[in-house]
Image 1: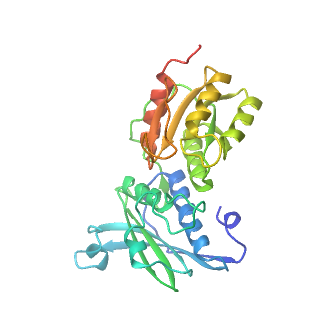
Image 2: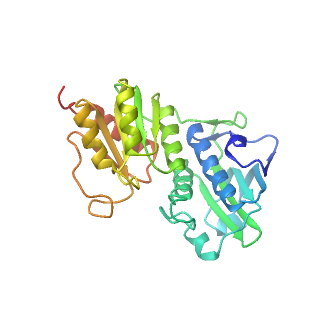
Length: 294
């Protein structure tokens, strides 16, 4: 998964410890979290370097350094992703998990990557720590609590969480100008049984909508950069296909830059960053809504 996503000059080193405990996490979201961390490492190593992924069992006790940093006592599987990149200043480390905070140049990232990893860790009843030194690289540690029933090092989805009935799955058109966020969205929809079509702009989305009559839902970011925004896209898409389901997503609020206009009828808004159960709830609400013109 990672080799094709990284520069050939980046060496990947995997160091798994034997006898890892079982943990209870969503495998799709774990993959996305790992990709987020790998992409951050890639961007920190433009000339190449080493990405190291380590896994180990850790017993956090009252006097340990992890406890002092906010990880409560307990048994954990720790996944550490480290790079040999440029490192981060102290201010960047303190704000690393804030949504939309980024040290990257405009247009190079959404600032959602680490906040999504943080959200995934907390959703999994886990914890995340980051350490970095300028010129020496960055290390991110994910702590996942040991599952009650231990049957080996397995990542699996919770089966006891009640989920709304999604009455229909099919092809969803996902429109998002940030490639990493777009991939994260695609992973979430795939995990719920949907097929997806991906577009980076409103103009590209309209072409795909015309070409594929099987698309039954539009999932679009509101702020899309140059060209039409998501609000304008949904209006035009509904004009062309009145029965289209629409779910918006945004980290902005109405009235802020790029977020001026009305939502189409029977649509829903999903706030970024979001967790999968929130996506499921909104999808259920959208599918229960009446289809305009049908």
